[in-house]
Each structure stands twice: as C-alpha cells, then as structure tokens.
Length: 254
Image (tube, rainbow, N blue to C red; front, top):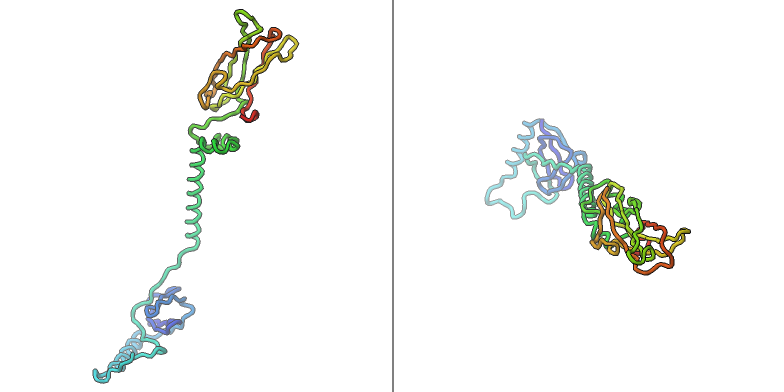
C-alpha cells in the first residue's frame, strides 16, 4: 500500500514512503505539518497504473504541442514518486541550555578578570576593598594584600636620648602580623605620656614615615618588623610611657 499526501499550499501530490510529522513540498518549497494535509492510502499497483495512464494521456504529437503549459495554474501536478523531505525541528530545550552555557562562561570570564585585575580596580574604586577582602579569602586572587588593622599586634618602648634623656626620647616599635594572610602595614598613632597618663606628644605616621617606603608595604603572615621613631622636639616633661595603635588609612582619609 502507498500513501499519497497533498500539499495544502500548491496542491502537489506526493507519494510518502516514511511517515513524518512534517514535510517539505518539492514543488513550492513550503513546509507543512502532516496533520494539516489531505492524504489517502491506495494499493501500489493501482497508483503506478494511474500514474502511467496519466503520463500516456499527456503525451501529444510534436505538431500538436501547445504553446502553453500542459497544466493550468489551478491544476495540481502529478504525484512525484520521490518521498517528501522530513525537516527535523530544533529542540527549544537544547537552544535554551546552549544560551545558559554561554552566559555562564561569560560570567566566569568576567569574574576571573575582576579578580586578576584587583590592583587596577582598587586604584579606581577603593571602596571595593571590603568586597575583595571577603571574596579573596575564598577564591584565588594572585598578588592581593589585605589591610586589616586588627591583624596587627603592636609593642613599644622608650629609649632615652644620650643628651636630653626622655625629653627627646626614641620610640622602639615592633609590629607583628598575627593573621594567616599578608597584610599592608598600617598607619601608626603614637602617643607619649607623662606619669599621670596624659598625652605629652602624639604623631600619626604612614609606613613610609616610620621606615617602610615601598608601596604597598606588606608584612607576610606571622612575621614581625621593628622600627625606631625619634622625637626631635623637646617635651615639656620627661616621657613616662608610650602607646602605639595601628589605625586604618581610610579612617584618616589618606
């Protein structure tokens, strides 16, 4: 048995060998669904005989060949024995998954660039440092240095001047990075105190001012550095004590 299907657009008849949900008409190129087209099932022998008989009727003598086409525009062409072409549908799920994959790869590339270029980004937008400090504890950020003043332990002592004694003392300061991460050296607030605990003199020094000019001045995790800070102006009274406090440069607007 043979199935013959009719194109709903141009009326062309086609013999169908394998059933499919969609077909492409070989005459007009239109793609149509099988359920929208008329079809009929006939014996193969009868279909072949009918096509042969139709072919014989359309053969004319050479001197009687008309100048116009044998088939009028409204007459459907004879069935072509070629099978209709099946056009597979593109899966919408596959297209969606491909789009999602592209977006994920793009997001990963942007995030990697954001982490790798931390120096440039922070130079343009210092307010993003807390974001970097949080993210870089979980993801690799090559070359990134933290700036947590709470990570430092400061110790200080007074050293008397050879001539002026404690009227012009020198402060001996030791900073220890007590964290597990590399840290930028902090700004130091140093106060000299009298016996009553009142402030005789105070100084706020950046790393370059207390002996570490490199930028950034970094102290690796668990390591310590020492420095000497001289007070050249004479104090009104001899200093009896000293306090040193690491502070953030951001709090000073530096």
